[in-house]
Amino acid sequence: MSEDEIQRRPGGRAARVRRAVLDAALEALAEGGTTRFSFADVAKRAGVNETSLYRRWGTRENLLIDALLSASDRRIPVPDTGSAREDLRAFATLVADYLNSPLGAVLAHVAVIPVEDAEMAKARETFWRSRIELAAVMIERGIARGELRAGTDPRVALEALIAPLHSRVLLTREPLDEDLPRVLVDLVLDGLGTRTDDTPPDCL
Image (tube, rainbow, N blue to C red; front, side, top):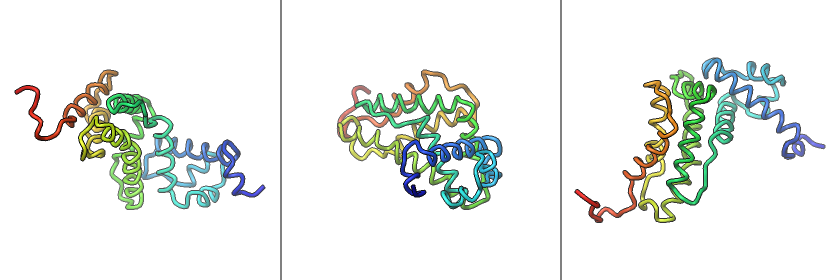
């Protein structure tokens, strides 16, 4: 069987090796941040040949993005409940739970550490852009169902929802209590509203 055929087999050896490498990459990030992140270190932790990493990912930046996106996809899947409000509540709760975990807290700090390496900085930007693009579907579905106003900017809405969670972890070091996601979602959606601009407010 060819290497390509092996790679196409779900759950095969290639999938197990990839999982081991991505787990090792997250471990390396958690311990050393992006500045010390290297193929050599990840390969040693995963018990694989360094050349295998070069062959599959090409650059350490590609591996960084893959590891972070994989962790986010596993820990923070995008919900589809049929309601924008419930989607966002579930999503914000998953983000809060992740940030409350040891790995999530460390990676949140890694994600904002200044780096002089231009390629690594670009990789981090790509990660955040990819996550926003994936999560934007919750806002887009809400617009399509008439729950949110047409023209609502998905990125702004998601940033308004998620930024306070990261702010507590990174700036104020306050706990992310279980009621906070609901409060933030209500605040964001009430601010976005579903009424048109010429509809008078309910009360003054």
